[in-house]
Structure formats: C-alpha cells, structure tokens
Length: 416
View 1 (cartoon, rainbow, N blue to C red):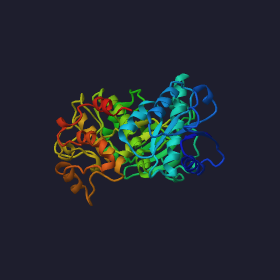
View 2 (view 1 turned 120 degrees about the vertical axis):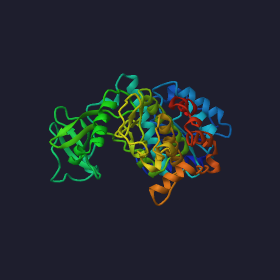
View 3 (view 1 turned 60 degrees about the vertical axis):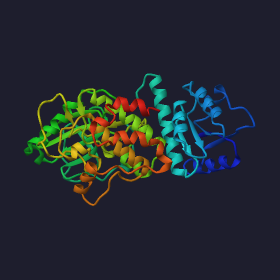
View 4 (view 1 turned 30 degrees about the vertical axis):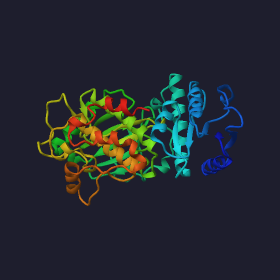
C-alpha cells in the first residue's frame, strides 16, 4: 500500500502513520505538510498513491475544494478526510465533494481507520471496473480461503445435484447453510438446505417458493441474486449469491462511524426503493439480512417473509405478527396489514443501532420488546449525534402516515 498523508501538524501525521502500520507495516508513506506548500495537483498524484488521508485545516473549505477537484479524475486515489471533531453537516458536505470517508480524530481507533481504508480501496476499484465496463459482482468466481469460513462438512450433509458443498457456514432450527460450488462452472455460492419437515408446512413452503418468484427476475445491484431453487429428494434448497463482505450485523459489532452509518442507510434506501417499486415489502429487514459484496456494495437477502402487494394470496393470519421483534414496526407488532413504510421503520431501528451501538428497545423477552415498539417513545440520540435526530424521528414515527412516505424520499434526504 502507498499512502499520502496531508497533515497540518507533525503530531497528526505520526498518529495516522502509527495506526496504519498496525495493518500495513511495510506500506510506503509520503508526508505533505499542509500550509507549507500548495496541495498537490491531480497529475502529480496519478499512480503514485493508493489512498490519501487529508487533515482538514481550521478553515475546511480549501480541503473540501481540493478533494472535489481531485475526485473529478477517476484515476485519482480515494481521499479520506480527518477532522479534529465530529461535525454532521461538514461530514455530509465532505462526502458530497467525493471524499470516501470523514473521520473525527477524537476517539478514532486503528481498527476504524483500517476499515475505512479497506472500504475506500474496494469502492475505488469497483468504480474503476464499472468505468471500464466490468461489473466485479458478476465475476464467475470469488477467491476465498475456505479454511476461514464455517465448519467442516458433516457426514450427514445433504447432496444437492449439480452442487459441491465446500464448508458449512451456518445452521438453524430449519436449515443448514453451506459455501458451495456449482459444478458446471465453478461459481461459488451459498446453498441453503431446509429441513424436510418444511414440505409438510404449507404456509412455510409457499413462502419458500414465493421467495424465488419474487426476486429471481430482479437484476438490481441491491438485491441478492438467487441462482436456483428446488428439491433434493425431500429437502428444499436455494442456491444464492455468495457475499464475501459478510453481514451488516458483523460490521455493527465491530463499530461504525456515524458517517459510515449514514452511507449504509443511503444504500439501504436505494435497495428498498428497488423492491418497493415492484410492489414487494420485505417485512424482515434486519442487520443479518443485509449483506456486502466484495466491492463494498450491499444487497438485501432472505425474502422468505416478503409480501408482494400485488399478490392477493394471504399467507399470514390476520392478527399474527410476522418478522423479528427487535426490528418490527408497530403495525407488524399488532398483526395489522403492512406496506412499504413498515420497512422504513425497520430501517430506522437499524440506523439507531448503527449510530449508538445498542438496540432501540431492549428487554428480556419478545413480548416486552413488541410492547415497547407499540407504546414507547424512541430514546433520543446523544448530543454528539443530534444532527441525525430529525431523520430518525420520521423513520420511527408510530403512525405510518408520519414517516417518510417512500424510500426514494428518504434517499433524497440522506443521499451522500
């Protein structure tokens, strides 16, 4: 890795250098003293650096203007801005200029900085690939080290014709999940094999079949690709896209900056707009169902509970809650009919958790959590995050009519 650190002070330069060396001990570093000489031009930077870290000066306009000018060139390296303190307005402005991230120096950890650099590089590579007409998400195979994924195969693994299971990566009450390889072309994917008892549960089986029908025809970057669905004997299975970037739940566990959270909300809003435009309501939006591709772009998965508004068949009983209590809307909790605005409430719950690091409502049991979604006012954000409160207030309104009325409206508000 080759870094350019543009800093006004030697202390900031040394701090960033020390953090970066925890991940890249052999990286090459160049220091550009801000204020002693003009900021470098685009031509000087082409091909010389992989990432630029810029400490914003007391008057940030010069740094923002330079970033915007630099990012006009698709070959220029990504820029990560570092500021003494968090500033939500300045953060949004920074990203609009083309910066890859905005990091408050206060409380910045090596892990956060390394993750920001990794994501900036992935996004930069994805944009360059798109400019050249190549979509990294459509590559035939994804190179991975399967020794680091999941558990060894169990002897009772179900054989699914046409697929070779590589590793077991998950198991639930009704399903086993494997990293697998499609035999005819070597494509690595996720193979979800359900328990045979599912075939006797007609409601569950219809949901399983409908999931494939709902999204198999969608060619959208923010929706998981399902390659196949069928039965291996009595075992229903789904073969779907493999996501090397893992889940949003994992990223939240590691911790996210407020700006990273806002960028993720912006992407989720685009994903919801794509499915809502087809009359599909997800109804089980949660961090575990939001996955990341190798290029850093996210996609929605697990449409087993999704409801097509244009489909008149009712696969749920009136008055029965469907979804995950931690992220369910008040109308879901009451077993009432839901529409696309229910997904927006769930997104609000996720946003709150990304910002604060803890759930919106927490209680020992599901019944208590459901009651809190229906009756309790959402907790307020701490003062340092108060700039996000108006967006959260609308997302988390108890009445659907008081929320954002579409994902597109939300995207227009938070797009950065």
